[in-house]
Image (cartoon, rainbow, N blue to C red):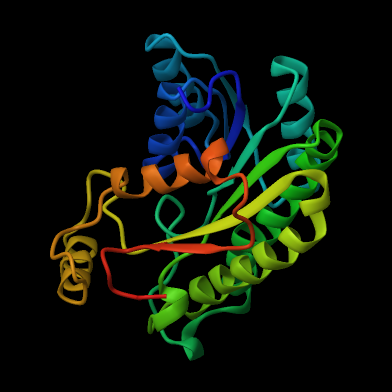
Length: 253
């Protein structure tokens, strides 16, 4: 029960890896807010949490919208009275797919849509929760990046660029908010089997990723959960500005 009575917001918590984070935090005693652009999916996870005896609030949230991000923070405080943890997980990649093409074929509109969620969304969600965390004198912000930042990934330049920005954001924010007792860290997962059903192309790509890893198997959401829980808990109170790569030993950072 490392997160007993803590209040955690998980953006993109209605699907895949975000759902895994939410369920794990509840098991550790947290009250969770599922901030999800797909409102029905968010509510389904919240109901799952309640069915397990936990407390959860589902909020239809578009992290790329400043008004929506501010409403997320306001309603969380109104419901639970605090915000201790923010997991910036929402991203355009799997649930909202993007093109797998080279730079010449990526439209400006698609580039902008990826940056709007993957980078501006992190900025807006973080800025929305900071006043409450500063008032508390405590907070944990966990930004989800990607191990592709360290190796590159052809045909995903918009996604990789956005996730590289998350690491720069993490380091700079850690410098700005440490005096308020707020720790900011990033987690960089490898290619993860996060949603079912998977099409044959996606499964083949993940199988190829196994070849480059030291640990020769597919990565599952549960492989990332332990690191996120560690960064969300008091066990990591003196760690900030860091990026932890969780990819089975591919990008050794």
